[in-house]
Each structure stands twice: as C-alpha cells, then as structure tokens.
Length: 292
Image 1 (cartoon, rainbow, N blue to C red):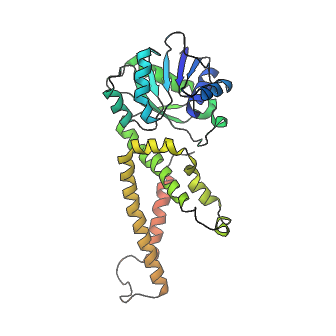
Image 2 (image 1 turned 60 degrees about the horizontal axis):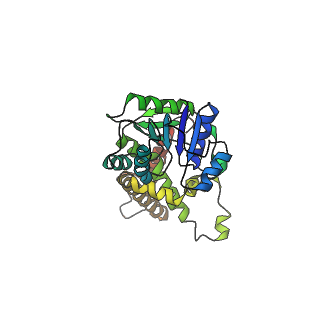
Image 3 (image 1 turned 90 degrees about the vertical axis):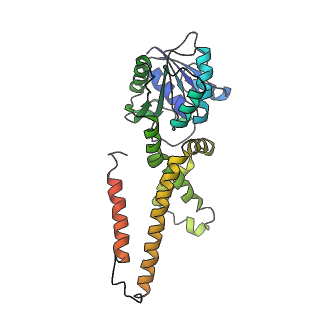
C-alpha cells in the first residue's frame, strides 16, 4: 500500500491517517469541515487535499447514516481502487449501499474497535488500534483485491483482523457495546437530581459504570437507531433480569422483617436467590478475554 485517503477526520479518521503515515503511506485527508481537516493535518494525519490520482484504498470514517451517500459520491469521483468504512453498525449501511447502486466489488465493510472513549485531538494517535480487533465484513461480491487491501490496512494500523458477516457483527455489538453504552447513560441520568451530599459519596464503582455515558449524543443516536432491533432485544432480556433482581430484593426485605405466613418453607430462599444472581455475574465477567 502506497496511498490512502481518509474521508472524515474525526478521532478514528485522524488516528488511521497517523498510523498509515507512520508506516510510510502517503495519506490524503477529506472532510466537509474545513477546520477539522486542517486540524488533522496539523496533527500529522496526512495532507489536507484530494489525491492527484486514485489511491489504493479510501477509508470512510463517517457515521453509519453517511456511509452510503459518501461511498456513492467518492466512487463516482474515482477516489480509490478499494473502499472500506469504520461505522459501528453494518447491516443498515450495507442495505443503503446496495440500494444506492454502489460498486460492491471494491467495498469491504470495516469496524475498528478501540478502548479510548475520549473525544478531541489528544485521542487521535497512531497506536489507538494496536492489538485491538478490527472487524471486516466482506460479501460474496467483494473482490480479492479489496479484501487484501483492507487486510493490509488493518495490519499497518497494528490491529487484529476479524472476519464476520454484517448481522453477526451487529448482534455482537448490541451485547458488548451498544447496550452497555445505553445502560451507562440511563444509570448516569439517575444522578441528575441527586443532592450534593450524595454525589460527594460517589466512588470509583459508579464512575466506572457511567464512564461510557460521556460519548457524543448525535453519533450514538445514529448508532443506536441503526442497530435498534438487536439492542432492543438485549434490553428486553436485561429488563427481565432487572425485574427478577428487584423481586428477589423485595422478598429479601420482607424476609428480614420477619417470616411470611407460610414461613417460605418451599422454594429458594431470598438470600440464596440473590447470591445466585451475583454468582452468574461473576461467571459472565470471567468469560471476557484477558485485557478486556
């Protein structure tokens, strides 16, 4: 790979450009926001101008709803020989791409997964993807050249390629990314009306649980809307678990106040049910890969 174009110079786009330039790739930056593309150039992500000829690969670092129209426009202009994107949802953009009549042979859907949740210039860095999964979603129409170019891009950025189909990717993201983000937001919203004395007691636990609530609302509205059904399914299952936990706690409170009329002779005791719920959480947490 000798040349690349980055369309969209936010945190992900800047970081990809910085990583590619560090490996000797001539990188060109495009963005409708003149200030954003100028800042990306100042941060070393590439050259703020269109390439003089088609590049080896163009990375569309734009929100999900913009992937299809941006791809159609850039293919029309002949920006690159191959294209990929970085959107955190794959099914809906792919359907929009197909409906737009884009060339599907030159496209590989992509999604780099990073741990840095901060916005702003300091978060744009070449090592952002080092050792992290980078999902690629080729289709039966994807050319070998496009897939190879995307795999090389992932390698140059230091990430680990993971091949998946679009629906499997979105279901996975609903469970491990999108719903946790929404739950963090809902929990954080409960703090709005807490008095100052209560907030002064907040420890690391609540800070860890609500850390993800600090993301860009417009971007996350786009992502959650695009992956609405899988996220809703996880929320429904979680809501059932929460209702079950609340019922256990109410039984526990009633049990602490004194034995019920039947003495709770049959069935699981409230304390046992609560311990079981906590043990299930430990088992689930222990299944996460090391370093997650």
